[in-house]
Length: 180
Image (cartoon, rainbow, N blue to C red; front, top):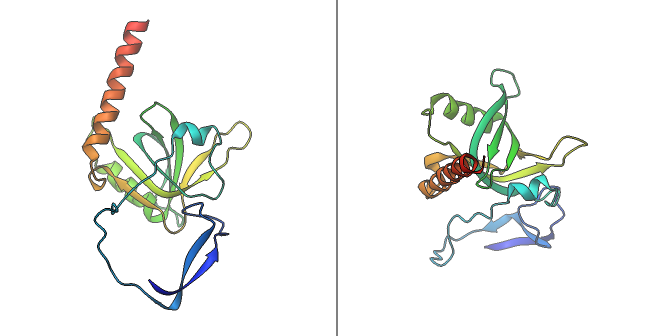
């Protein structure tokens, strides 16, 4: 990368909490390089328990992954597309998510065509946390630009995540059956 500015990282929403950021200019040029030791896609998943406890920095974009729990609200035909649903992580914590526009339509389309009985794993990248207000817990939503939603087979190593969810569900059902 050549001809760029180094700026203070004082944006409202940040992809990382580093003190500085690189800003492209009209003269910025990039040259593609291969770095085999650096993974192409790396996610730093935030635990739902940290989000629910209010332990996430406001304005810092996060990555989450979980199994679709239930659809709460869907507004696909309005001028402002919106879907509200809950995700469950591998610890059993549940968080409410809101997706807007193209992200909402992608989820609705997948939801309408999914196979019954299969867990639907959803990965949200660069999403933002909305702090809880009073009795309402924190929620997660896509940012207007930069967020990405991956569903099931779009996620690399999806079988690993599905196995973890199935193992967790099986463990919980066995635990509750024998603990009663």
